[in-house]
Amino acid sequence: MRVLITGAAGFLGSHLADRFLREGHSVVGLDNFLTGHPDNIAHLMGHERFSFLRHNISEYTYVAGPLDGVLHFASPASPVDYLEMPIQTLKVGSLGTHNALGIALAKRARFLLASTSEVYGDPLVHPQPESYWGNVNPIGPRGCYDEAKRFAEAITMAYQRAQGVDTRIVRIFNTYGPRMRPGDGRVVSNFIVQALRGEPLTLYGDGGQTRSFCYVDDEIDGIYRLFQSDQQEPVNIGNPVEFTVRQLAELVLELTGSTSTITSHPLPADDPKVRQPDITRARTLLGWEPRIPLREGLVRTIEYFRGLSGSARMQPPT
Image (cartoon, rainbow, N blue to C red; front, side, top):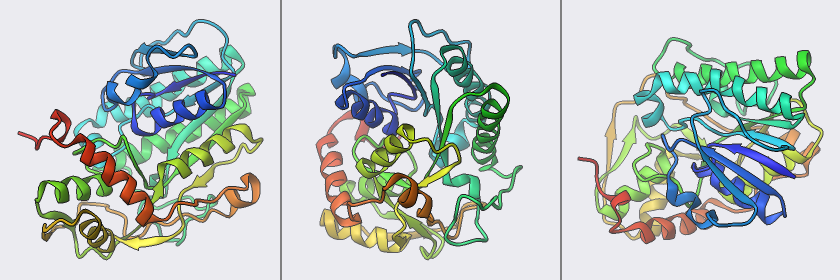
């Protein structure tokens, strides 16, 4: 196959490109480096089956040649990013998804949307199955991301029903691993970077809110299986093992050997109290479930961030 991956220089997009190339396919990567980084795809430059377009998918986009798949992963995806760039976030979820779907329609390609557990908002159902419609504040500070993804799902299903595009929707839960961006505001990278710098770990609220952390290799395997499947309804891909944020902070301190302390700050507006996927659909239809436990995944991720030590990317913000 020859596939287009938008957001290819991002955390997940770059790993997805690796997987498709490893399986023998060809990849056209597209990114404007708004939140992605050239380092994430530097190892792919010069690969005979990889080509790259520096471009904003929210603007008119032309991709030469046939395509068998379009995988839309372009979007700010952390609270720091989408709170700083709400307009860009809304544009890539709406205009960007529209453009990516248009390419899939024109090329008669299969389309996969990278959606998110944020479509469930601050959930009133726990764990969250795909049938749950969510509890989202559309005008709150997180609404730019939540509603962008909810619109992206709606237009994806509209193209499936009205235009016959062969679509897939993956709802991605908290994912971590190498190539996360230092300072991106995600809890795993925040804690690791703070611990390695010897800074206090920033805990919001009392740390009792829960998250489910999926290592990137597991996440990409689930996404790849979904793309290859015939499942056109949304599918949760995430780790159903639940941890409190405080437990994560304590584990990061243990594994890094850091002497950092833990400090508490007010809980951000609309921050979900619980987050745990029901992965019955993924288990049943894809034969998928995560295999890498949190401790093992964190060791690998900490090693990656140690390797960045001293680089410009690890410097504290000025």
